Length: 58
Image (cartoon, rainbow, N blue to C red; front, top):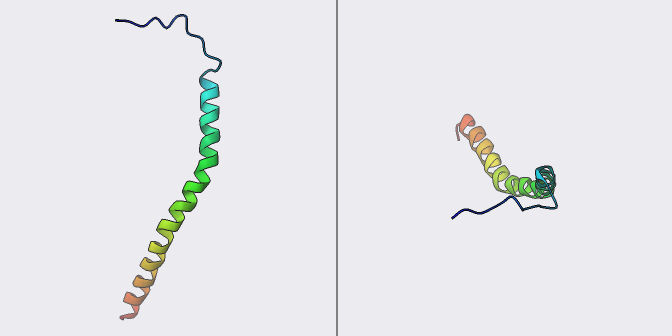
């Protein structure tokens, strides 16, 4: 069974989809980066403190 797509017309094209995707990514991307910072920055700080204490011989 085959679907006839020849009569299909959409009110938007590929450029519109890309532009809306980029807009959504720009809006959500900042929140994702802040969330990742809250996850990874404490781990990096702990790593740095452990390396300094190991270098001092504690």
